[in-house]
Image (cartoon, rainbow, N blue to C red):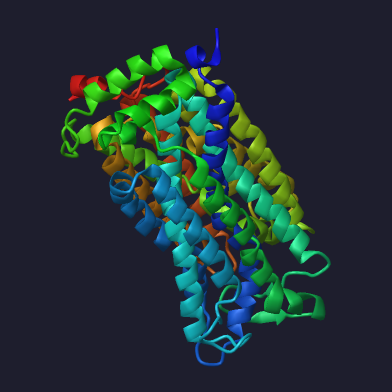
Length: 489
């Protein structure tokens, strides 16, 4: 059978690989703060015109998430009006601008190396710009892959986007580790209470190291913005703007000419009404999409990913950055579990078992954190917690969000779901440090066990939610979603 009859796997793989670069940048941008935040904190704590407090650092560490909320909220409009491809080009340019601006926020307006309130505002503006890129990529990359992928391997291909996110985090852990080199992180007594020591080896991290960490993102960002120009627009978007011949051409290259004609027919049947109302398929359709996003963040995973070096340092680990890199490798391996089992086991079983594994890990951290002699148990519990997320809520949420909504409302519905994801990401990330540092009495560990105990309880609730409400979508085409929700309405 020739290529025109069966389609080209190499063509499909090539365009998916370019699209998942957006996922890599998503992971890179959100995790770069983990290595840079202590140097950044010490830099702004030397400001003369304001006090850089616990609250300011929590906000600055999470400020990119404000942009993520904005970008994801805009993603539906941009994906519908400009198309998936052009929206991703915009995302790539925003990543690039943010990387260079975060590295040197003084550009044009401020004196280099002088921390001030105005410079902090400018730095956060650049981080928000990058966040808008992340928000766009987080919604549109899975949507793009889902709309070009054949139904029988769609879950696996969309899961590669999560692999790229985790790989991006791992890459930046390594990049931060090598940028730090023989230099060390500054020692901060406690958030907002001053710097205990800035040795000569730490001074470089405060003045320069964090800049290189943020600036390193410009390389993958520029590559993504360039390569995305060479991928095709998705067939489903092309049909929605009456470009049927272009849609058929793309479908034929992926699926073969005979199957492409049938897929095009199915797409046209479900896109006859181009602008159906968001609630056409019932409230539950939107509610489940939103709650999948909410639970993905409310389980608390990003509090671990963003603050991993600080957490491992507080546990007494001699080289917290190296332990963070090791955790990144574990995360990669367990993301592969999802990629190679999602089409065999289905979406629901992975989510349920992942929720229960996360609950076990979170409760383990809550019980053991801070107890002498229990450091290894705490570290293993954190690994179990993270690994369980990586084969379940990490990739599978993106798979479901990319495929669960009917064609006619997908752009808007995905935008709403992903916006909620970033809202809760911001809530969890910005609340983690003050919540973790809570004390009922002087020196107690209330904040430690309360924080992870709360995450564990949320994990159990998430498992029940999936078991009772989330439909299994394994093997269903995107066009089947309209029928599924009409029947459940």
